[in-house]
Image (cartoon, rainbow, N blue to C red):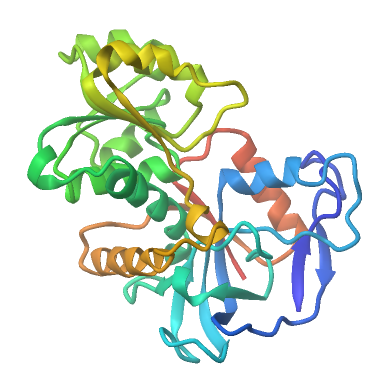
Length: 337
């Protein structure tokens, strides 16, 4: 099968940052689906893994990345019960396994969902990783509910990015929150409003903008950009007994003491936790993706795709990574095969 990978971590402008390779078509294990991939989307995790996973070394076998896909089941393992050959599926993948930048991919059925019937492959491929991340951060980490939290305030740091785009929709449509999103450019601010944000503020003067809008504190904050870069701001704006959650990690320790006087809770979210550790509730991602598919088909949610590239090739992946590394991407960039 055709695939695109790399053997060493290089700047995206380097000719060898991605390589076109030919690999053996994989064979499913007991709970695996073999999926013929039709479209993938690109996320910040893609370029971060490319930049860091093969530093100062040359891998014997090319590393294939990619963590969003839409396609059709071509074969199933002996213990598969959730899907059959011919089913249209979408999923976000497993960071410990070979990725979706290939014609075929093996994926555990427990982290796969039914592709939304109303969406094209490219529109569907834009959704899984970001929807799972936003869903888990709201419902599994922060344990928000519409019964308890309707009309409370949520500040989203990074509203126009991939996760922010679907998080705004989930927060408005499912939880009934009053959503404040950060954006600094007119086009990204407009996108946040299109997704459903009630208020858009400039991240460069966040405390002032939020307070000028009439909010001394906000009930909840989710960070999709840079935990430590915003930490003092988050600690200032969060309401006493509120909750902050982040997906971005931190090279330096997070100063949790700054939350103590307000008795504020803090949570990390990593969408790959369930698959990496084979948790007892790993199948929850199957259920979440199916529920998201229903919401998309019902028109409650909408896809966040904004740009489409064509063709499984090193050149296409280079173009996609260069775009994401620019830090100016709105919504999701998708590649169709």
